[in-house]
Length: 109
Image (cartoon, rainbow, N blue to C red; front, side, top):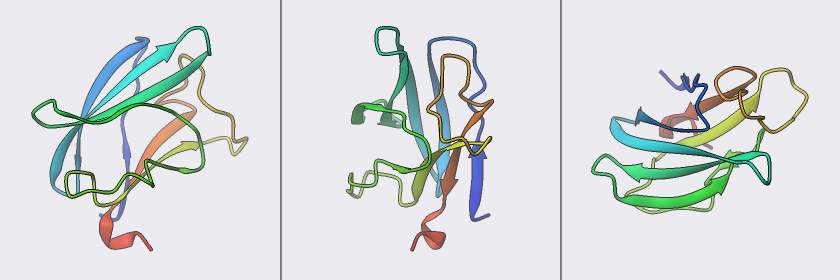
């Protein structure tokens, strides 16, 4: 499987999701910032060690593309606006209008 959607459907402003990316488990933690009205996401390894602190969720661009190390996912994570409007997610949009897509390492160019 080269590209897959990671299920993020959740009604909570703060939640976490374990995702297996290229055979390795990672924890994605989502936090809603009320003042900015936007989501932030952190990435941790399976043991809970933070790899990347809270980073803005921005649609239609690779997330964490500049973060490279052996402990990071080998592929690319993208938040995609399924309507094509290119609008960042509101409080209840993750997993609904905005999907998290993972492109496996073998398909990253």
